[in-house]
Amino acid sequence: MNLLKQCKHVLEQNWKGSFTIPSPRLYPFQWNWDSGFVALGNLHYKPERSIIELESLFKGQWENGFLPHIIFHNEQKYSSYFPSADYWNSSISSYAPKDLKTSGITQPPVHGFVLEKIFENNIDKSRINNLFDKIVKYHNYLYETREYNNTGLVSIWHNWESGMDNSVWWDEILERIDIAKLENIQLFRKDIYEVDESNKTRPLDLDYKRYLFLVKKLLENKYVNVEVNYHFQVLDPVFNSILIESNASLIRIGKLLGNEVPFLQNKMETGIKSFSSILWNNVDFLYYPFDVLSQSQIKKHCSGCYVPIFAGIPSTDQVKELVRHWKNYNDIFLIPSCFPDQIGFEQKNYWRGPVWVNINWMIWKGLLQYEMYELAEQIRNSTINLVEKFGVYEYFNPFIKTDSKTGYGGKNFSWTAALIIDMLRSEKV
Ligand code: GLC
View: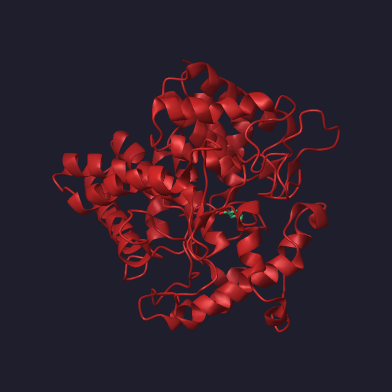
């Protein structure tokens, strides 16, 4: 089967009638940013599914605008996920939907720019209008509840909210959690039984306990706020770039729909300025996350340092400085989630080294905007080749010369399939 067919086949198999699961068995429900990426792939051959995908996702939206990272549709059918719907216990919040269980944390807000693509495909205007209002409400929630000191940048409250679950970026922050406090946290992990080499490709139990400790803290506050000294409060350049890119889309759609959003425009402009003053590092020429508690940047070279390119945030000179780093790494597939010379790098472990297609897709799109066509084409080609050679996996070993299998995690992974479809279908420039 050729690659395009394989990818379509994956999306077909993972489609559950009104939403797409990220991968069979390993992730059996609807995940937030996954659905956005999936919708982009479906637009090329089943556009109706793209809008249904977002509509199903927003069924899980809370009354205060918050959009959870997992929506447990058909929950009775699967007892195979941990932490389960009951563990999250979303009904503790009066804002949560009554008829649907969800998690209590969010994920990067991709929906605005996805909606713009759906809009360009001329799908039902009243349904677009409806989704537009919901996405605006979600962004309003982010600024009203998560904005840091009027900077236009919002905080994430859990490493899972970044979508890059065990990135080396979060190591020191998570280590702040006193190990003694983790003793009573029980694990019923399922993920480690669903993948090969789980001891090398998934987070460790101790890390997992830390993640659950944070969930416990958030649950204590019914997921609505955090205490001043709550451990995990980070201005993540990936989350914030995606928010800005989606804002730009909402602003454009709003103009066309006669529904302008000056509040978001204002926050977006402030946010872009804060990228320069808070997240840009003028010595390393990279964007880094900012840890609110220690008031310092987390200086580790990861793929996320480049995602601001997607949102058109850096100047052309800054983009040149950014991509110049890549010249120093000839023996790897770009762009590894952590660069091999960084402390904490692991070539097979999830977000600690492997290449992820969604990040490459965003950086590819960004480079096109800056008219850096050759480099963009290089990223597009190497990403397509990786999937063609090793399969529609969740993540890939970044070393070119490795003999072993280089695809890890979930097999038949939806966003890999969807974004490869988008890359294959894009005109060569
Ligand atoms: C993993 C990824 C996360 C994704 C989820 C479902 O947890 O880290 O970004 O949303 O899987 O695919």
